[in-house]
Image 1 (cartoon, rainbow, N blue to C red):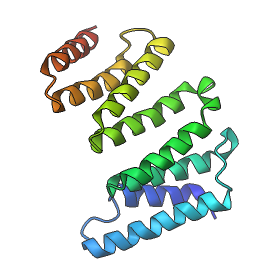
Image 2: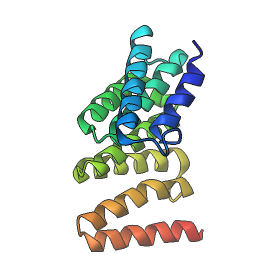
Image 3: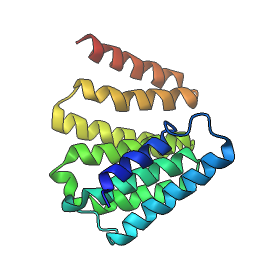
Image 4: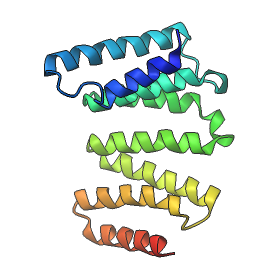
Length: 173
């Protein structure tokens, strides 16, 4: 079984690239099959999240995306928190990977309207980016945009305006 091809197929399903034009019931059936395949892959590999087993990381990420798309936020959160907890040691060697998972978690909380949690994670991402890349690096814009959206959704317009000013200042430089 070539897991890379399976992930490509499953990711296509999750992003609806392979489901365009299909009826809703068939889409749900295919999503259910994708979930079972991902859970089976994780079961086969023992669910170990290590550098040498990135297929498990891929499967877990795909599973989180599938749950988030289906608005199964608690399951997405649980899977993602398990994933983040298991790669915590890896974060010192690969902060980019950790930031990627934190961005997914922040996005999940934002979709779930858990804005306080999303905001704290976006701030953590910004802190990591500032430490690793320097203050006002262009990659700092992404978490700032997340903070801007959250501030706007919560009607914290003064904070949103400040975030937007920061974003524009970085983009100009």
